[in-house]
Length: 128
Image 1 (spheres, rainbow, N blue to C red):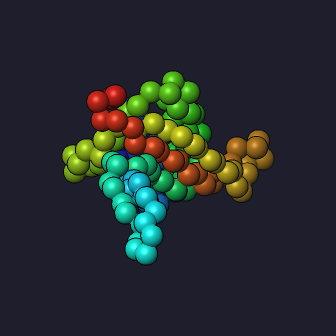
Image 2 (cartoon, rainbow, N blue to C red; image 1 turned 60 degrees about the vertical axis):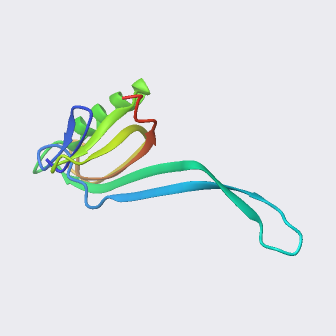
C-alpha cells in the first residue's frame, strides 16, 4: 500500500499514483505602517492540499472501479484519514476533485490507459 484515504488503499491493485504533491500555507494578517514595513501577526494555519496524479493501465487493473469508488467517497462530503504505507498520519482530508482521462481504447470503448489526478484538502483533524 502506498497511501490510504479512509478504507481505500492506493496500490498496484487499485490506483498507483506517480507522484505526491503536498502544499501547506500559513496566514499572516498585515497592518500598514508609515515609514516602515507592514506589521504582521500570525493568525493560524492556512490550506493544506495534496495532489495525486497517476496513470492506470487496464491490462493490470480496471482503474474505473477505483475511480468510481473515490467519486462515491467524495459525494459523501466526509473527511477521511490519510495514512501512508509507513503509518505516517497526514490528517483528515476531503476529496475536492477527481480528473480522469481515458486513452488508447479497446474496440468496445474501454480505455487501455486512464490518466487521473486526485486533489485533497485538509480539514480540522477532529472532524475525522
